[in-house]
Image (cartoon, rainbow, N blue to C red; front, side):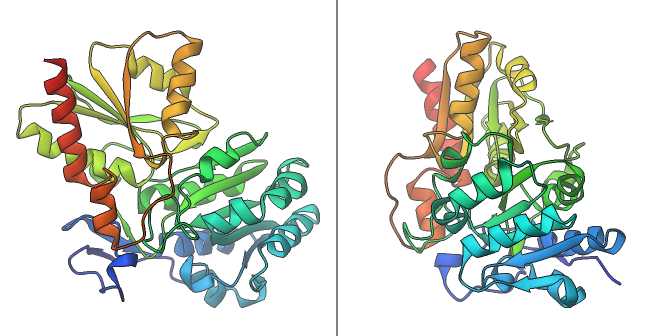
Length: 339
């Protein structure tokens, strides 16, 4: 059985049918195809309890990779997210280890009650792998999960993971399988960036880590915005700005100690997230700072508290400040404002 995946650069990756679903990888960034599907196969090879369920989105969440390798453990539940979550809960009650895939909007807006009362409340090890988190599609409000973490952060005993790249996903899957309780992962699918292997980094569930040191500016980031933060740091070095990047792949439980230790310096701090400014990484950081307390300003780079436009994905990332160039411009503007 092969569990390897193929790496390419973004420029070499197969072209999508439309820019609305373009790869989130910046030009020239190495990518890996379907890291979740291959990682789940590797876990399933050693654990017969692993099963995969999807709500009619196997090919669009990379779970079809698992289905091809383990057809007897793959369940296509149709366009019924509540049914998929309820079935996964029942399987977990019998001792199986379910991974369930759908889109983030359906997992949060449509199936919240089933995730909360059937899975999280009884403490079942069910792992929801939800694709299209934040602004990773241009199809408009029906598919843009810009508020998914805000919806779920208040749910007790739910782990929330926001991976940056293929390495995060590959290392997170076995740890999620081994960890007790329910989890929700903002899954990156298809041609997924691979950037963290260039740094002294490994994923550790529940831990934030300084990926890149720097003396002038601190970018606290999660999800795909860690890729953008690292790329922005390289560009800002050309302006003689030394940027540190602190990656927070686990939003809940939040590693407040590591984050606060990094913030409690004279550096200017910004948070970077592919999520609304309400209820995500920025507010997790702000709440932690209030509890210590640390009286320092933190500037959010995040999606606005509004329904977003539809359109070409690169255009939207520029418009809403998530592109690498937009992050660079925002940091330089903040530095200028500080004098």
